[in-house]
Amino acid sequence: MIEIEVKIRIEDPSEMKRTLIALGCVVARERFLERNAFYDDRAGSLLAKKEALRLRTIGKRSWLTFKGPAQGSRSFKVREEFESEVRNAPQFRKILRALGYQPIFQYRKRRTHLRKGRLKICLDETSVGNFIELEGRRNEIVRFAKALGHTRADFITRDYVQMIRSAGRDRTRN
Image 1 (tube, one colour):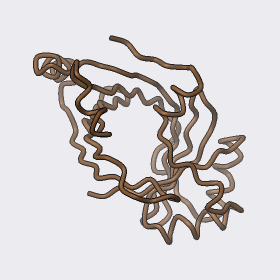
Image 2: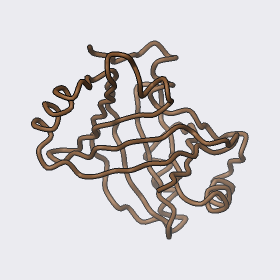
Image 3: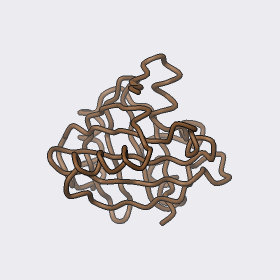
Image 4: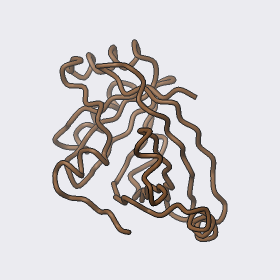
């Protein structure tokens, strides 16, 4: 699957949530804690290819995600992405280690998930600020961002790992 998304910095997630609901968005999942751990081998093979292997945990549920390198786009983050639920995260972490993968970066965020038609909307509260993440078709993202008073100039295509590292809030554990 090809993922197309952007982030936009916001001030107040609660206020933005009220705005989104007024625009017809539906809350798919109320605010929750999400833990993300990125894995790579000792040689940094995935990072060298600009790929990512992430284990995301929400409560007692976990998902493994592979993200391919970013595809050429200035305004949008476009990547191939494959994801599958992991039934036993502790055992799966042991499998990853046995295969030579270790956690290279970890972070947490609070997220509220909303939808408007096919557009996926997330309100994210991170250590580097609050963001709205829009995922869907390019034209839907642009149209919805405009309804919120934003233009392509406001779009952020960097991921949270890049933003956290550049802010010096690295959660790497080896």
